[in-house]
Length: 158
Image 1 (cartoon, rainbow, N blue to C red):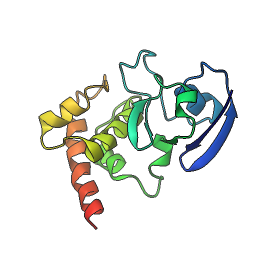
Image 2: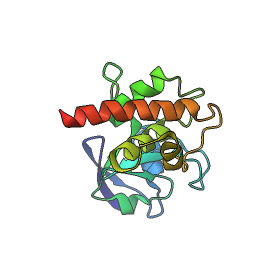
Image 3: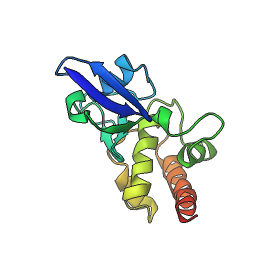
């Protein structure tokens, strides 16, 4: 089947089997490997991307369901020279270790700041409960999200 979607600002038109997952389109067809497949059961959140401005687990979305959508992956939110505020906060707070969960965690955290509750450490922990990190213990991740929330809110006010 033919699927057309916009990924990181570029329209993509692909011929894929009907049962192709969005994560497969991203990784295998478009070679954007920052989006990870961790569990194949939507439990870990390593495959989280934004679809039409909201976080989704790309291992649970068929490519056909994403047709016509705007998809943003970790590669689409910042550059080496100009990191997204959430990426900077993760770096500044040492909120990553092995890095496997980091792209999905960052994408979920951005969605949390834009659409959820970041009023407390507990609220951030609850907001990120669909993402698993086996290395950091979450303390630094929560600190990073709270720091980025302040920066992102200031940017939105300007």
